[in-house]
Each structure stands twice: as C-alpha cells, then as structure tokens.
Length: 245
Image (cartoon, rainbow, N blue to C red):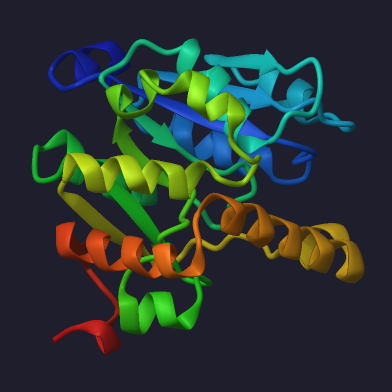
C-alpha cells in the first residue's frame, strides 16, 4: 500500500521516539513503526547516547534522527521532536519496547484516526497489576497518540520540566481540555524495567530518581486526582478480563 495515499485520507501522524543508549532495542521499535502506513513521519531524538543508538536509527530509510548535543532527558528530547513535526497528531513511543508490532501500533492509533477519541494510551502487559486490573489506566504510560496542538504551544514549559515529568504534565493538559481517551490494552508488549537494562543497583537508583522527579512535579495526592479524572474521560479497548464489568 502506498504510504502517501493512505495518509492523505486521514489526519497526519508523526511518530516521535526519544532514545538514550537503546542500541540493543531500538531496531525492533523502528521496524514496527515503519510497518504502519498511517505513520507519515518517524523522528528519533537521540539524547546524546554513548552507544550506536543514533547510527542504528539513521540506518533505517525514512527515519529522521535528531542528535541532542548534550543529555537533556526525555521531556526535552520529545520537545525537540515536536519542533521538527507539523502533523495533526503525534504518536509517542519509548525506544525500549519489547514485543511491539505494527498491529499493536495500529490498535493504539485507530481510536484517534477514526474519530472515536482525541487521544489514546497503552496499557502494557507488564504495567503494574493495580493499573491493569483495578484502575485500568497507566497514567505514566509513555505510549500515546495525542493532538500535536496539546504540547506544541507549551514547548517553553517543557524545557523547564524535570526529565521524567512529561507524562504527568501532559495529563494535566488532557484533563484541562477534557480530551476523550481510549485505553488500548497491549498484551504482547512490555517495557523492560530499569534493573534489567542497567543492572540491579544502578537500575534501582534510576527507578527511584524517576519517581522523585515525578513527585517534584505533582504530589501523591495530585497523582491520585489525575488518575481519577482521566478515568472519567476514558473508554477501554479490549481491557483485561479481570477488569471487565
């Protein structure tokens, strides 16, 4: 199928993938994204990796690579990708996803492109059990489809955020604008935990640092309020059986 013919009949969509030292994993993500005709542009923002992440990404035809001059964190990497995009919607993906397939991506983007929702979020198979089976939403999921306009007018604010504060900041905008959300269950996709990637102690330290940065942006009480507000805006696509009413 001709990618341009497919895209012309639907809202335009750019995929932004922030990446830091993901040499062993990023090729899997890129193969999956490039297998989805609705994705008109793919941008990898390499956050000054010390490995071959940027070179691997650049080896894929049709992938634009932005190389950050210094390591600035995920939030600023995504902001760089937004500046380089002009589409109606953005598909945000982490660079370390395992088991990602074109079908999973198509399931995530379908509710937005067909007009069912204004945005969508993934619910991966290794999200916390409370997210999957009780709350039904992973409020810090990095895999989302959003209107570009949601973040494009807030790039200066993004530059001042903590590196791991992007998702909770975005949640605040989603709630303010009352965007309908589709929650898409991804039973075949997982994100490796930081100890798997970095080793036990370094991984634990990075995991703690991530949550400290989130709690510098919003309090624990505000996080619960975000979850409750987003649940009110949500509809579920193929949610896990234990969560079904």
